[in-house]
Length: 258
Image (tube, rainbow, N blue to C red; front, side, top):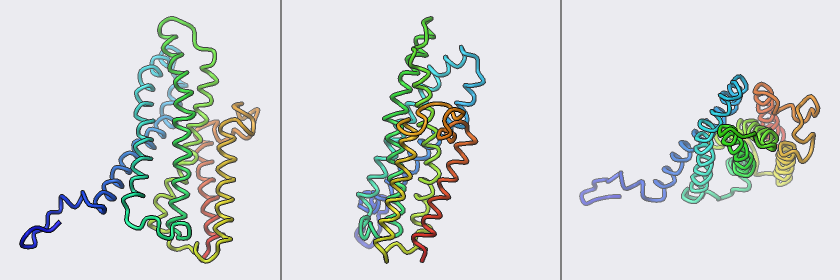
């Protein structure tokens, strides 16, 4: 905004389209740090710590600590998705050549993975954790644990570790888009793009269906179902997350080689 005499009022630039796009990115980063930070806290700190606690201490922690953390966790996921979509609306020419350009295909992949993670948060983790929280309240009041609480906890835990597994690749695409995707050739061959999206959808669908217990071994431990190996420990999910990232990296190197 320009005032008389050429004076520039920079503060109000945040209210134009460019400023709103920038503000959306800023808020998106804050929300994303909160969401993924809490995801890593649950999986790397809270769950292993709960396993080492006494039954009474664990029940109390679930009711007090986990309940509050889950509130911030699920709403940070909402804020991340909303601000991410806001970026696409405010950024100028965001969708120009979106389906062919390296940055368009890269950010689309990251967005797809993030949306799968969001659905896991609200459709699986939170739904199952409500049962676990209700059971903790009942036990603290002197009652018996809900019979379905153990299975609900297992399902929530697998979905949470699935999100850790997916997060490495998701974050990589979010940063790769602006900083390295331009080194690849995605525009010259529609066949290459179709191949990429078929492989991407198949990989993500198989992982998600396995996590939900629809294929593979259901919610059985890895000793009974090797398909659940990625979800069995922190070590396993970290290894699996980097393997998935490596698969996508190789796909770009092979399919979109310049």
